[in-house]
Image (cartoon, rainbow, N blue to C red; front, side, top):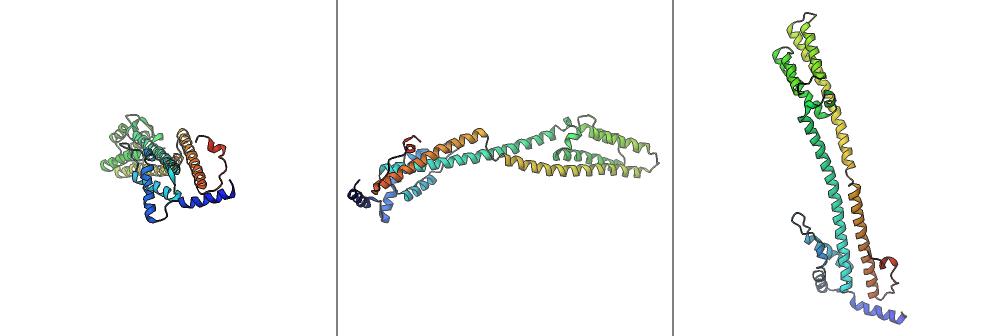
Length: 287
């Protein structure tokens, strides 16, 4: 291109740089309605998933005002840029939804495990119950019942121990055996103590056991809280399969958007009379 041709192109381009008056810009904005109909096909219009058309129109208007396309080719490229950007936002939303789903489902399953432990408590020995906060809480409730019966009846009775044994499905365990030994010792009463003193000894022994369970429960709650925080932090990444799928989708959209941006820049520079080099191999490939 000669210097005269370049200068002529630049003079001609000054006459087609787009509307400058407010009225002209208002008319230009209507191009989004005439030429952006195809890009609106990207909107999801399902029964349970419906994207906001007004938000999409506002996004499209901002891009058109900033890029100021002239002619159908430039308008088409701007539509491609808007569409790719909108789909990229959807990919980020999908990633956020997948993370929230992982965290919520994990927490729900763990809470169900705690509920199953509470309802099937007789299938677990005391040593296993003492390893969880809810297990210690259940043991404490049952032992409080024994403590209350001793306080009311004045002694540790066989009926009170049998009531606790029923909670374990009738299976003897360390707690019921300890209470049996305590009851046997109190019945023997080698020191000849008064019934009121024996009653206090029974209440004290059970109270000490309750204090131990309370301390164990507090330690379990602290540990379980830290474990839950760690599990939720670990769940803030989608599964490898989902993450790879999202990354491939985002990479494809980025290629489409950047390719459209480069082509749009080339068209606008050519329209302004600037010398534009031949397209690179990257632009010649399909996005």
